[in-house]
Each structure stands twice: as structure tokens, then as C-alpha cells.
Length: 415
Image 1 (cartoon, rainbow, N blue to C red):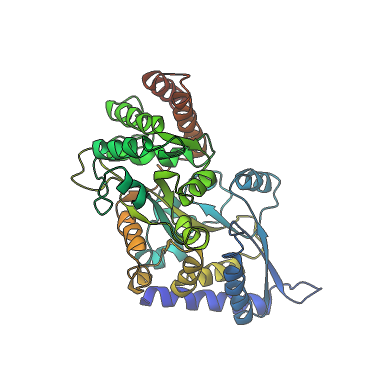
Image 2 (cartoon, rainbow, N blue to C red; image 1 turned 120 degrees about the horizontal axis):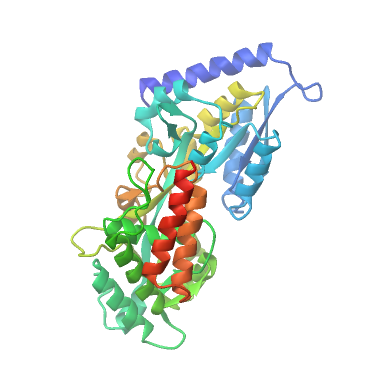
């Protein structure tokens, strides 16, 4: 633990002590209630989070944490409503894609001083910065990799110990697995599913040298040859794939019905529980020429404090406790994947002893988050609509991308 991080924790401790002595307490319990909205509702993960929060309350007897669960399908809208009504929680978990949106709305408490003191100790600050100001703390990070069924590869005459690296080899492998039987599919392709489909297309776009936006965020770049090639390649995978939701695709993979699937660390935890005999492996995102691994999507969970919070110092104390390397690592272990944003957690060897997690760890170093833009949530919706229209044959790839280019231009020009 660095000196900066220790100073940060000490400062938060003193601030909490001061507030516990000087701030008005709840007449009912004598404790300050800090509301915390979060997304970890999984029955395996939630108890770990409650354990960590319980330890925080023991160390801070003057604070009571009130937890509210959110879902990824409805959470964004609930958060928008909460901020719009002026009744947001004190502490809120936001995905990396959502932090810029709410930062620009001026509803988050600026934490530049506190964050800059520990910025060298944590990874992936890009989504939380607006100019030179910080509005969130990184909690933990994850990425997406290719899962593959070794038995299906063997049946298709492929070498399971040498998973495909190039686009052409990957497409060939998916086709050969898809030809095995009527109830076997080469690739698991996401259907139109909010906040998910774009994460499956962007790795192919990035790996081909394409971009969604210019560096200044003012110009869309989806009409580029690189974007067209990436979309055309993705559609070839769809042709030899099973089109369904992420959950159903994961389940089909665990039943041995899909050869290759782009998925996240949650599947690492599910496979031993649901399909312990599944003979599978994980590998990097393929690149056009296979010389180097492709670029994957990097997602992260971030913790913010609302501007209207009446308990900012207590909220800051809670966040500093949650992002401590040991606590974040404990939560990651219960999830089965992911990596604490704290760099010092890299010294832990739990992920390096597992060859699957090692691939995730290395892919994370060659991943990137969504472009930082105040209206990204609307841009991602256009990308998903674009991919969806081409998957169902409503538009050609060129037509869909040209339309997306115009729609995104309207969004960024009105920013």
C-alpha cells in the first residue's frame, strides 16, 4: 500500500470521526444512514458484499449503510429518475459507460482532491475524468474473451490446444463446428439486447483499427472502411451462429451446443457449478491477421457520490473501504472473475494460478473502455440498432453504418 493511499484512508477516517461528533444524527438510531445503490444481486456474490459492508459498519459504529439492489436492465432508468427527482442515493455504483453521462449532468460530487491522491495506485481513470476533474473511484475491472468447446473442436477436426488467432481461422473454425449437426452452432451471437450487443461488435471494430468517435469526441467514424470490414466479418459469424440473449447463449455453451462464444468472467463461475464436465478453454479476441491478440472491451464498476448527498464524508469513507485492495479482491473472488482496480492487488496470485483467469488478466491489458462521451448511452443504442438491422437483413452493412454515422453526428453536434 502506497503512502498516498495510506494518507487517503487516514484523511477519510478523520473526516468520519469529525462528522460522527459534530453532525446531526438520526433520532431513531443515533447513526448516520448512508444509502448505497448497487447491482450485485447474485446469491453467490451478494453475501460477500454484505459481509464487507458489515465490517465497515463495525469499524464505523456511527454509520448505518442502507443497500438498494438494482438490475442492469432497469437500473439506468431508475438512476435517471432518482437524480431527476432530486432524491438520489448517497453512494452509487455506475458502470464505466455511465459515469461520463452523469458527470456531465453535474449531479455527481467532484472528488478531484481525494482521487488525485490515489490516482497512481489504481487503474482506468479515463471514464471518470471531465477535463482535469474527477467524479468517481474505480472499484474493479473486467473484460471479454473467447470461450471455446474443446470437444466440438476435436469433432470438427480442429486442434483445441491451438485456438484460432486470425479472423479467417476463427471464421473457418466456427463454420466447421456449425456443420457438425443441426443442434450445434459455431458461434454464439447476441441478439438485440440493451447494453450488451455493442460490447460484442466493438472488439472487432477496434481490432481492425476502427473507431466510433474521433479523439476529441466531436466526429463519428463509423463510415470508415475499417468499420465496414468489421461489421461484415461479424455478420459472417452470425451466419454460422446461434442468435440469442447472453444468458441463453451462455447456457447453450454450457450444454455443449456452441463452439465459440464471446463472454465475460461470470461464465467462469457458472461452468463449474452448472457443467463441471465441460471440456472448454478460453483465448484472446482474434485479430485480422492473427499476429497479435485483438482488442477487447474493458468494463469497470465505479463508485460515485451524489451532489445532493447530505452525508458526503461518510459516503467517502464507505467508498474508501470498498475499494481497499483486500475488500475488492474478496468481492472479485466471489464473482469468480474480474480484477480490483487497485494495482497492488496484482500481487495476489489467485488469478495467476488459474490458466483461464490468466487469459482474462492478459486480455484486460489489451482492452479499452467505451469512448468517454456525455451522450454515450445514446450512441451505444445507435450502434446496437445498426448491428441488429444488419443481422436481420433490414439494411446492408454499408447502409446501416452510413445511417448510424448521420444519427451520431446529430447527437454529438447537439452536445
